[in-house]
Image 1: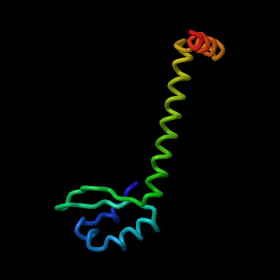
Image 2 (image 1 turned 120 degrees about the vertical axis):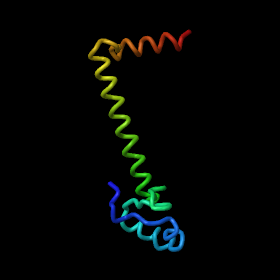
Image 3 (image 1 turned 135 degrees about the vertical axis):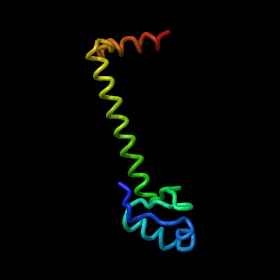
Image 4 (image 1 turned 180 degrees about the vertical axis):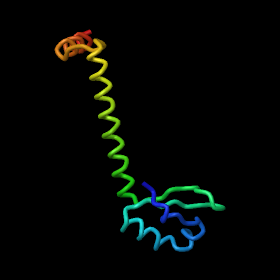
Length: 93
């Protein structure tokens, strides 16, 4: 979650970019940048961003698996052997 203590004007970030980047890397916490007092962007260090993307990918995979399991329980799927047999038939054609 973005901390309300980590909100800074974009101009302040621009003036002290090196220090802000070091802080982002150290804290691993995102920062909100404002323009004219309104939130305009969220910045975070590259490693934390990659970890966020990895988590999102995992959650999407889990959601897909759950959806597939539910569809199979509703009779919308095929048993594994039958699915492989159909794939082999397609390959042979």
